[in-house]
Length: 295
Image: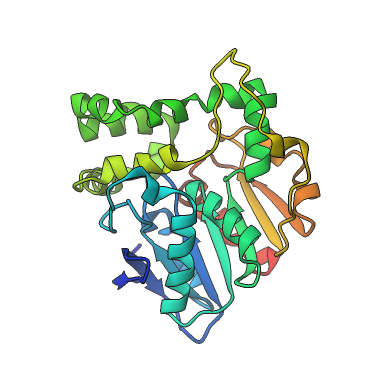
């Protein structure tokens, strides 16, 4: 579906983003953040319904598709996309908003809700781990540690050389398609993904999100020093929070839902039939969960 406009928006962070814009600016605002390795197209089955009574913004985040791709890993540390998010809201005259994030977009959404509760009125997370739970699970849960070894591969500076050897289309077919329900994507969307990943600098920029992250991913059998923050208090997520979780996710294991209630006092969890890429594997379930919750 293309029931939205794609606008080029320049931000004071020095970044230009392509942003899908839909709905009436007078309606309650909602901002949708995609993850790796996607774009605003993640939300193609969600935007039209939300736009019936919300003002919807869905940016291609820095480093993705045709948005700006600054050189250097430091430009992809999580505080930079958070700054883009707030600047985007300011650019459209939005003070408080409902924030929805999937995968890396969810990681940015968690961080924004923790640090800017004055701006995030409600939080919706779709298959994205809470930062404390995720780091703890990488030390304490063998299944999650094993499932996260791909992060170490993505951080390898030689990963681009590997992709160059198989081609972007080969990367899609061999490294991406086996982990998703490709029957829900189709040939047209496959071509869109390959086009976006083929933009100059796009592959490195997308991978730099992993390289800039402070998350420690121990190797199988390794016992590195445990981060001190895991054994101390962690600040609560104050905004009302809806977590939508696809139960067939093989990258983020069920342990990511354990102990969330202690970290998110106003929490609702809805489990749905989908893999990791819930917004396009089961977009109607995302919309229904948000509607039922009152987003």
